[in-house]
Length: 428
Image 1: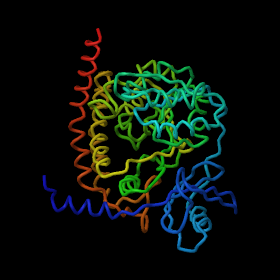
Image 2: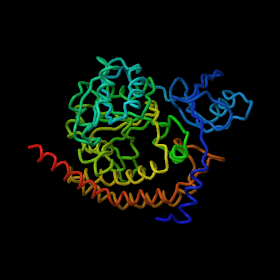
Image 3: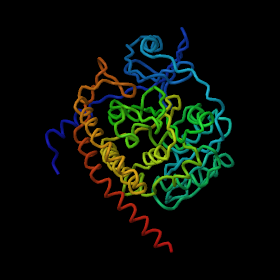
Image 4: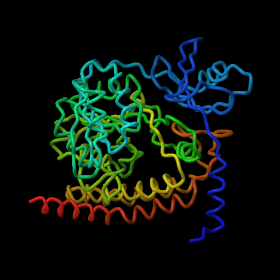
């Protein structure tokens, strides 16, 4: 099918987006140390996306331009000191024994990179469980047994679907807390400690989520995604309490996408098991396309437990690389959003009156946000451009695909449930 002139222009602008370097900057008084991001080359002149740390903790990001011949550390440190505030001082204590679950499928190279970063965690007591989801080769098992024997447990789950794999991991773990991440991340050495320490200090905490930043910004797709917020949720710690609903979240707790993402989340194991884990008809690898993480967040909050977001628990994520990847991601995000809402209401129909009561205010809030989106200024997560306004417009095609996905989501969820039912009946 021939593309419209508008579509061709959107793709042309997309292809014109240049690469951005990724780095991290530790600022301590008058001292500053600049390091390349995970897997990135040393910083040179040009645009640099910088994670700023103070006292070792992430406190903000900035996009700086380093002139040719200038001292990159000095240029970026001056910006960081002017724009970033120190981290909030707290000491939640020692984290409980934790299990880390990594679901994967036929990506042994990426998995090895993720496992190396997980084994370098400074958490005092943890285990790692790899769930090999519907494998077609033995590469993942061979990798774990050859390189990570006695340090990583391998579990095979033949039924496809991310939620199914996560539930298999949940059944296998031994920790008081279970953390989930993906095979395409590099975890900061303090990720697990920062993500789980609060569980020991707060008995009412059911879930914790953390910060996700781009490991590379080498392709137009990666830069475009991050320029519109990526997966980051800002640099302010926040606790969501169902007994004290936030005034700025009219649809709480159904606005689960605001709480975090599945590549960086942890649950109190007993709490997640008590709500039945994740709905197996959601998640990547099913007809629902996604939503398993959001489902878990809402179920835990609806059961009366608190959820805490902390920017100090950091993983670096390898964003998708091509235009086609972005199209798939946009459609899948929309589908997962309505699929998880369908799953919540199917599994907890008692929540329907609360959802309907919140819907009018939630829709009005969404319309207000949409009205200002074209002039929206960067707040915490994205890549700022000149004068802190977004310089890479979000393509309308991707917005349309997301809306189509939202229409499809409930249908996809029903199809996924039927497929699971058929699989169970066929196994009898």
